[in-house]
Image (cartoon, rainbow, N blue to C red; front, top):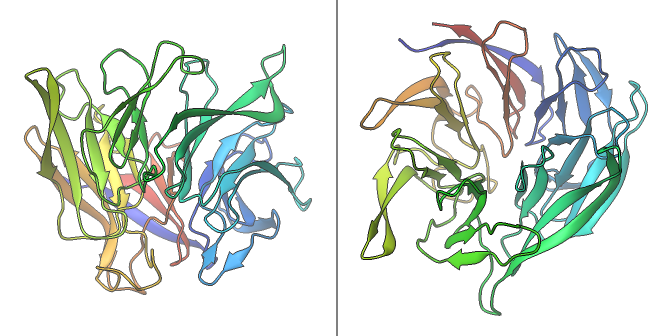
Length: 364
């Protein structure tokens, strides 16, 4: 039986990224999206963070990563975008109505979007931007003081440099492919094997596949329970959603591509979480509406948000929202899942060029 959902409008703002963050430390989840934060529990009070530069239909704001960057006990936000060529963080002032100060972390080149993973297992996430046009693969590690708190500064670590004719491409994921418990990095044309010391030792490049214009993230998860991780990949700017299994043949890893949904387009972002409470994660994803402003395959199709449940042999699709442009909702470039009401059920926060909405999980 599929889950039931209650769709609630939050804002007509067209920022494509949003996250659930307790902005004012009152124990109640808030929503941060672009230049505003929306105060929980009903998200009707809207507070400005600052001005986000706009380029046509786009805002230069392609992630909303929560992290206490300066160690003051308040959650800040890390973002970046294609046109600004910079990774940035917004400093949370801790008081509604006060502007958030913007800080430049680094000049990076065009950022498609950014993700955060704990690469070295120290309990603090590292920041990994996908810069498709760049040759260097870079990770930004938060510098901490003796108290273990953030200092407001980051160290840039380049873990791989492609040749002059190669770039990292569109697509980024992280997880254990090698089977040694370390956090490998997945890119469009292969994966980087994490060494014992990710900051001092050499990462090994394995050019084993071509994922095309891949989603961010590429999910690295154990789909079938065989004890090793597979990959889930969406087409970020075209049709298709797949999972990839692998086996070792004559000492080499060979990947096999399996269809999940070939009929929908712009699967740019996806999340692997247990939303039905059965103890097993589901694939939650949807369309990034007007990903390229109406200029690519599938842009004018009916669209929506879905979850896919592994049935032991393949993925079964369940619809959360679906319909024509103007009535349905997509997931934007960076959406979030969290328990917004304390029900024990995970809800969905969906930004995008089609507005900001919450989908409340009403259970079975």
